[in-house]
Length: 512
Image 1: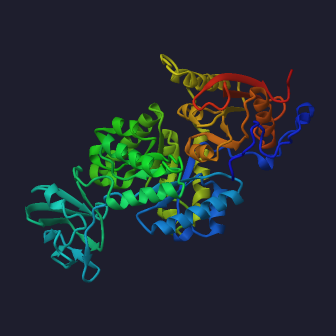
Image 2: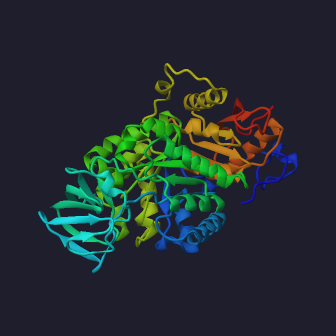
Image 3: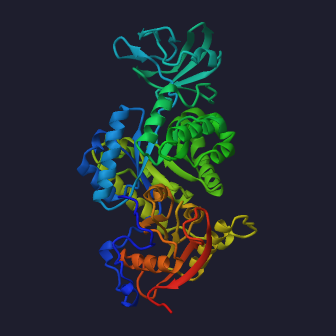
């Protein structure tokens, strides 16, 4: 969908003649009514979901953000998939965001001569940075600095924690261990240290190349794996700025919280990011699975309070890789993330390699809707003892408060950057929020924001004409009907980013 070039704020496909203003407004066609789901769905692409038909079905089923996993495939593969996503979204008459997820410094064992070994409790086993092909007694490392990061008494967790090794001593390139918990160990399985503390940088050379490729292919979000502190995110932002300078591209940055040491500096990482991902896989390995549910709630609460977005990820519907229905535990897991206030829930292998990618999205969307029905809204309590320092923030919160107490049908922000809708989406509200914008990039960005939908509205410098065009668009799209109350926010002068300073309450179809 191209960015409109017209200089007037008129709804896409609305008549250019003003004669519609005096015509009676008809009730919307229920078929065109937008989804009521507030929580967004992120789906990972892979072999199971890379055809044009499957992608279109996934988007119709409810995908809001598509994830490209840069741990697998080439830059060319991802560019081709990004093109397929844009084409499928156009077919579905929707804008979805694309998120590039960088691999990061995933520390892995090397390869075995026979592909795998069986480790038994009590046996000695060596991790050797100089080893080329492993056997029953040793294996190589893809991170040669690991021997400098560990010491006697450390616990190393392999293959997502299924295998546990006790470090006995370190000698040169060799880490001598005793197997505490054995099992099958195959090529390239990951290594974590219990409690964290590995020094591998968040951005590897591969990540830097992938980041540049992602910016060039026009992604909307980039997820940074394993950041330890603010500096890691600031470096990523500098690289994005350099890569995006020729075109003005500025994708949003998502910090994946998956290192134990990141927990101690959560606030500074969140402040240096546009959002976070609660990456429960590696995080659970480092801090212990029992600690993750409380950390999830804390991270979601902290991100929302600091006006950042948050994605909850890892094994949310894992059984649907092979089964057509989720387990009851998975249903509860997704529902609890929704009730915690997450902006989005994420699917990984379920849609990348699973048998039922479309059905998984449909099931997740249904769970989100049911969980949202039980939410209790306390907007009055949210705003008690609060001091607002920005005009656009004050207008955003006033719109929420007004819509809540007047039972308005919708809150509609005429916006260039989407900032006003971000302020609004940090508070739970029963009133749907709409970002009406001429910018496709903004439509895609706000696709991740909880309870925010987008509609394209052409640009104008005339506030009254803009509001009338917006009202007609809402009726055409089934958002509101004659007699419904709608709250609009807008900035004057029109077209100035960050300038929202006006709130207007409109009863649809009644003017003068």
